[in-house]
Amino acid sequence: MWLLIVVLAVASRPIEIRLWRAGRLSDRSLTLLVLGRSPIFMTIVAIGAGLSLPVSLLLVAASLIPLMTMYRYVLGIVQEHSRARHPD
Image (cartoon, rainbow, N blue to C red; front, side):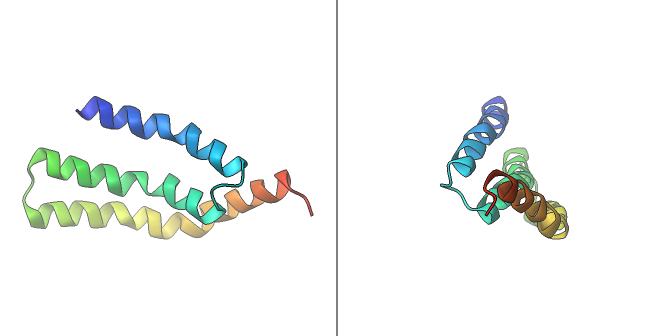
């Protein structure tokens, strides 16, 4: 099961990139998908490992910190690449 989760997380990235390039995903959506992998993965690991609820919540909350701190930075990179692809 763990291997399947890792494979899906890795395999979905090229699909997301293709959808973004085709204009079907917004810049913000792509940013959330890229940064959201860690909290989702941590939630699955906490549930699968059978951790207690307080430890699971702490682990998931800790995995949200990079998402919140890097959102604007990664969004800027994505928007820059979007502008480079579609100059006005």
